[in-house]
Length: 225
Image (cartoon, rainbow, N blue to C red; front, side):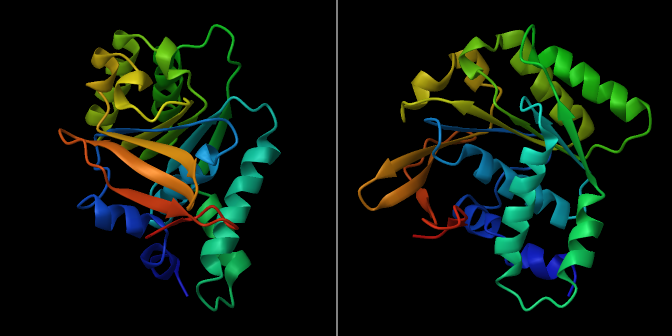
C-alpha cells in the first residue's frame, strides 16, 4: 500500500470529478460556512490530498495549540485509510506527515500579506512549499492588495492555496468584495440542509455553478450525492 492508493480514494476525487479537475496550481480557493459546520475538516481533506500527491504542505492556523491541528489530520487520514486494507498505515502516515509544516499565527495585527512574506522567508530558508492552506481568515477584512498578494504568490510558485472563513450567507456576493473575489478561483460554502450537510460550489473560475456535494454525517468527508 502506498500514497497513490490512498490518493485514488481520497474524498477530493469527488470534488475533482464535479469540477473538471478541481483547483489547479497557481489558483486560490475559499471555503466558507457558519461556525461548527466543518470548514477545518474540509480544508484538511484538501491538505491531505496534497500530501498524498507528494506535495510539501504548509498549514497556517490561528489555533495556538498545534495538537488540535494534528488531530484533524489524524482523523482524516484514519477515515481515508478505512477505505483500504492497510497493513502499514502508521508507517505510511508518518511518511506523509513529514512533508507538512504547521505555522501558528497570532490573529492580532494579522494581514495576509505578512503571512505570505513569512511563508516566502520559510521557503528562502530551504523549506519546500508546494501547497498552502490557511485556516480562519476573516475574508471580509481582507483588502484587495492582500488578496492580490496571495494570488500572486500562488501563481509565482505554481501552487494551490486554500483559505477558510466564517460566513453565514450562501450568496457569493456576500463572501467578499468583487476585487477580492476576482483573485479567488473557487468558492465553496458548507451549509446544513434537511437532507444533511452540503458543500455547495458557488464559484469555479468564471462560472457560478449550482453543483454541490455532501459531507458524510459521521466522518465529515466529502462524498458524491
